Length: 389
Ligand code: PXP
Image 1 (tube, rainbow, N blue to C red):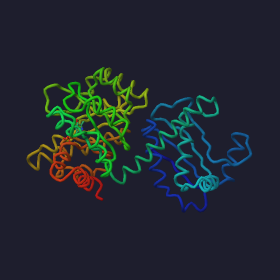
Image 2 (cartoon, helix red, strand yellow):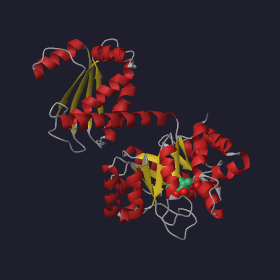
Image 3 (cartoon, rainbow, N blue to C red):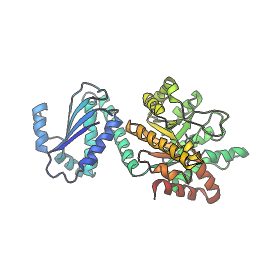
Image 4 (cartoon, rainbow, N blue to C red):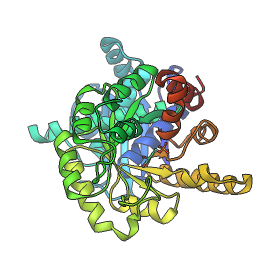
C-alpha cells in the first residue's frame, strides 16, 4: 500500500509527515484499498490555486483537490490518484473551527480520498448525504484506530450475573444494574449473549441494556433467525456472531466461517444494512480470517480460550503466538480485531499488549472476582491490566 507523500509547503513543522502517512495507510485499509497506491501533496494556497486554475479553470485557492486516476469506484490494487491539500487554507479553517491542524488535515484527506473512491457530493443531494455519512464513518474509524494505538478497550460480559439470577429463578442479581456499575468503574463497553435457550440473559435484559448503557452494547449471538430479528429490532452498537450449541457450558470454539460463507454473508449484509457492525468470533486461524474478509465482517474476535486454558508454558506460548500472528494478519488486511474468552487476571496483560487488538471481551474472571471484592474493584483491577493505568 505505498503512499507517495510529498510536501512543497514551507514551514510544515506543525505536521508530522510520518504520522500523516500512517493515517493515510489506515484510511486506505478502511476503504478496502489495501494494495492500492495514493499520492498526497501538501502545498500552499498559491500552489493549489495554480492547480485549480490549470485543471479546473477555477483561479482561486481551495482546501483540497482530488485527481482520480480511475473511473467510478476503483478496484483494490490500482493507483487511485492524487490528493492535494493546501496547508494555508487548512490552517485557517482549523483555527476558525477550533480544531488542531492535524485533525483538520485528516478530514481533508478523508474528503479527498472519497473523491478518488468515486464519490462526489456535487452530483446530487443523495450523493452528498452518502459522502458525508462515509466521511463520518471514516473519521470515527480513524479515531478508534488512533486510540487503539494507545491502549485496548475493556468490554465486560455480564452474562454470569444473569446466570446467578436464573439459578434461583427470581429477579436478582440484575445484569442491567451490574452493567451500570461496570461502566462507572471504567469499562468501555458491555457484552451480553442472548442464547436461544435463554439460559442466562433474557429478552428483557437485552432491551433494558440497550436503553440504559452509556458506552456500547455488543450483543453476542448465534446466527439464528429469531435472535437476528431481535438484534435488528433493538439495534445494538455491534453484534458478535458465535457458534452456539445447546449442550455446551460456554462457547466452545470459534465459528467455522469458511464453511458458512453464504449463510454468514447474508446475516452480515442484513446487519450492515441497518448499520450494525458485525464481529465474527473465530479461532486464530488464517483460513477463518480470509473467510471473515470474504463475508465482509467489520471485526473478528480472536478466541483466546486455548491460550488461557494451556497448562504448560510451552503450549501457552504456542497458543499466544497463534493469536499474535492472527491479529497481525487480520489487522493488516483491514479487519478490526477484538479478542476474548477465558481471559483472567493472569493471562490478559500479554494479549492486551498486542497493538493490533482493539478490544478485549472479558466476563467470567471479572464476575468471579466481583463476588469476592465487589464489581467496581474487580473491573478496575482488570482495567489496570488492560490499559496499564
Ligand atoms: N467472547 C465470546 C465470544 C464469548 O462467547 C465469551 C463467553 O461468553 C467471552 C468472550 C467472555 O469469556 P469469559 O466469560 O471466559 O471471559
